[in-house]
Figure 1 (cartoon, rainbow, N blue to C red):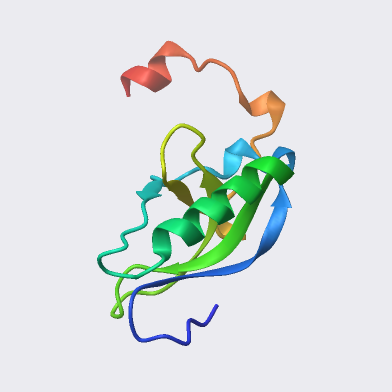
Figure 2: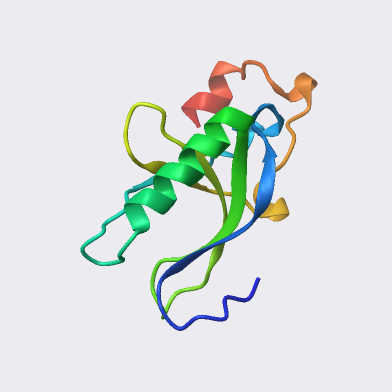
Length: 116
């Protein structure tokens, strides 16, 4: 991913159906974001319209988040908050961060191994 901006930003790439999101992809803490018309004029109206459209169409957004100009950007999933006026931003894991555990590996270990 390459963020072309030198300052903190959130770039939307597209939308996916809400039911296609896998809860196993939540491996980092999520962020809550709110609009602030004092800093960016019109941001409250834009976020409200985006949120309402996402709720109506039952989709979430996929985008790129850069928190600081000195950090690297992350791919994120963006969900609308129905009760509050904001959005929830969830960092998505890289493929290397995910692994499947075979069902035969889930079980109990022997006591000597625990005591060691």
